[in-house]
Length: 294
Length: 252
Image 1: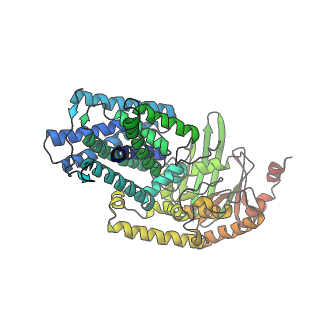
Image 2 (image 1 turned 30 degrees about the horizontal axis):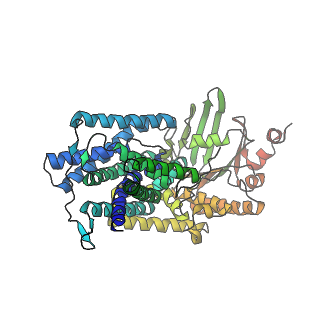
Image 3 (image 1 turned 120 degrees about the vertical axis):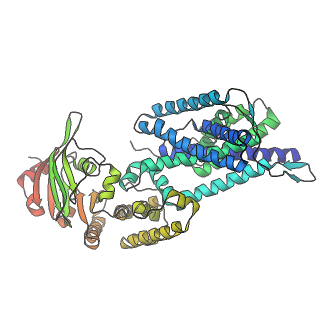
């Protein structure tokens, strides 16, 4: 029983990281109507920035994380401006292939700068672990911070979307960018803002991920990125609560799968779950069926 | 005073001349109608006026400023707002939020202010809410402010689209077939609303319509378009009795 609870806690922790990444995927999809496959690699860049500033230059972790968030925000906006904006009217396939190209570009830039060797990432979390049930259940500081960060981000984002002007503009653009533009909404700014927020979240996700799983390579972001994409589709792509629920469920399924079925098959189980969900409910758990006008 | 002046406006899509040598002058405060058979190019003209399409020839002057070829969003800021033939509300947003999207540019605060909830955020949001509620009240939609836009009945959705367009504080309001899909009773009410908007907001209105009762009931002047070209223009009654116009509508 204790074992199960402990796996569950680990699953929620990993799931929280997936959820934060998935929020970036789902927002960009909802508003810019594109799949940003480079999103996972922004996570890796975020982690490397913290690695360089904290382990390398010796800044305090908080400063390192702030620098990383700013760097990723700028990186996300730069990617959008340089790689995606010129393709606003191009076919979806062209945008998708560009996104994959950006993903490889970021991986190779990191490879050039940091080399292929695995770096050991020092956790930025200094909170003491909590011992419960006479020490049989230990919850690490990383887990606590990750889960709390995820909940704060989730609530903050929903409030921002619902109650602020830029959030409303995002919702308006996601529904009908043409009409939004005719009502005076700056669509280009709104899309850039979406990338900025998504990438800032990616930086946080990168730090949290590498604090819990402290090995860092230029490919660190790709698998979590793909899994977070699965989580976003699982929850219903375009839906913010969907990304949250999808992320948490996916993390729990992965950890329980590892613990009780097979650690080698855990990833396969995750993707099998996606296939089953899509067969039963093609729009994902919270996705809506949208009738396309023909 | 002339509010809108369009001269020699034309656009080609590939080899198709969709609009050719189109001229239009609308006075401040006028209720002007643009009519014509299906495919005559009426909506194309709206798209040219709002910058969705860039004209191949001619120019558009709004209130003395040349707005030809400007971006949609700039044209909206210069003072043209529109509604759509097939309603295009933000259907997942509340009725109130739809209007607030329209108010976007007139109540600025930065994104950072919104994220950090600085005092300015609360002040501006309050102003926006008040202004939006005022507009909704004018259209009798204040009770439904919290409804999802898609849950409003059809006639009220049309009204909400007009309210949202007015929220952008335009000088010229374009209505694309406002009576489409309405029954005679709803059309009657719509005519009252349009007149009311003109008088209450001192608005200049250009509308596309097929419903002749509405057109003859409220439009002061008309332009008739056929195959992308002007067939007739002038006072409503005179235009509607023009044999050429009757021929175009009924066939010879």
